[in-house]
Length: 259
Image (cartoon, rainbow, N blue to C red; front, side, top):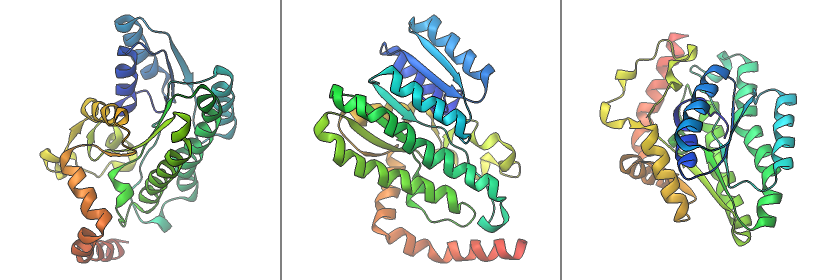
């Protein structure tokens, strides 16, 4: 479970622990990881292993690959770690962009690759790649975020076709706006939560409940919440994109003027 210290990741920890699964929690913030781990051990009596790791770091990612390979078949691998940025692609420092590629794309691919052999041999297991509704959107100011989430959707769909016959399930979970600390970070210092209508927000608990329910039904691309499922239908048909194209162009033009 990567990105397990808060938000959607922490809710996956709680929901899976409630089902009796032991957990390996991965994240960068030890204090928060330890707090969730203590809560889960006390409430559910399961084994919890805390691993401190930055998935943008090669050595730490390699250590996690080896840990997965040594543990044997996992019941679940949840690739949840991620972060966002704001601003035009050319103006955001290269190191931050490359870190996003490593965390969203490379880490998800490598940890999945490490887990799959034991899963397919056992004939069971599930991989959940936490993507986003942004994977269906092309948005100025979120260029690489949208692109990496689109990759996770495509990767998950293709992988599901490969491993289905081995009894392994794959899901790309695509939440919309979710109440977590995602937007509380420095990159969103000028962003206001109340700029998004209240009806568009979901809780992390509801998102995870939907994910696990849809996983059991074999749904590969899981868009959480009816409002976002309807949005995804329009986006996949490109109809809504054509409707919103003038707005997107105006936003890009405004960003150019603000530079």
